[in-house]
Image (cartoon, rainbow, N blue to C red):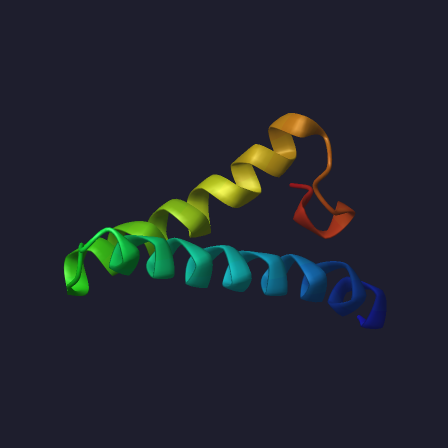
Length: 64
């Protein structure tokens, strides 16, 4: 259990950081609102793990 947390916690923080950077970038270009933030959240939530799997960098805890 501890090794699973050790594998997933850095990925969680990376996804969180990526989300905040994307939201700040949206605000910088003048796009504001709930829907764009949800779109960014979904893109990060589904795109980040998919990108890591495609690059072969996914943690073993994400193996199916």
